[in-house]
Image (cartoon, rainbow, N blue to C red; front, side, top):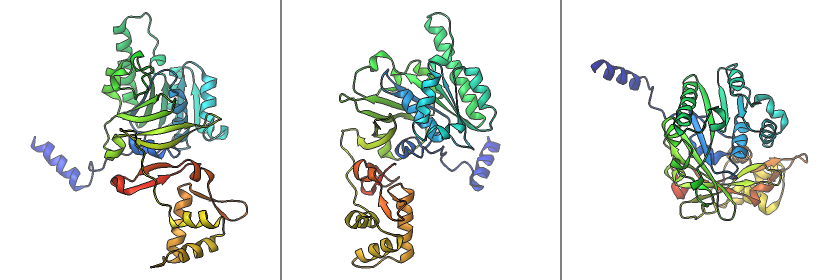
Length: 339
């Protein structure tokens, strides 16, 4: 026992084992990133038929795919449809870092060509071939498959499994609970994070975490984010809502957005001057304003177009997704927008 205490003390002294694990961010889904602390370990997406779980899984997978984090997507029902869905978010060119397979063994071989990456099983039950209808056989097969996925995470891979909710979750208009997932005992045992996806009575889609082993800000444990489906089936995040159905309050615009809203598009030099002139008391320095412009650009709220002028992105005016900073509570509400 003394040896174990000494080892733990050494780890603390060296600063190891004190940080909270953080997974891969979903660049186009920052609220889901905050709700889950990123993609790491095994993430499960639970929903009833017709809620759009495969469409969301394809978007999340495509959002992660990159040269140093390739994605292997296993769809056991419609490989071509899965490929199309994965192309919606970033286009077909982005698919060079993502492969789609209808065979589990083939997909696993593709994944192991890389030292890290994501494998998606859509759906978990479809990935297992079990003869007969005996429940014990299916339960054992599901547990075995989840155990295999758990072994992959120990090798440095991440896993996303799409899980069907039981019939009790159909047409409730509410978030599915963990026990409604088919073979939920295996999900509960191995999944690090479980997201529930559902449609309310107005057919609006929402997502919220129903299990998370990683600590996140308290408000994200109680919140749901609306998933908006564009005309081309491309998904984006909408308003963040809380358990009572209330929405996060609208934040004030930043000085940069205020100027562009009031005066229209302008050059970098004119924008810096206008922002400084708009502050009545202590005027910010030129570099401070330039940093603010850069931050607004990185957040996707403004863009410089071919005319060389800064413009507010159209969806900032129309579709803000209000979220709060970590540790900020309701007092620290800010706005995230996605283009």
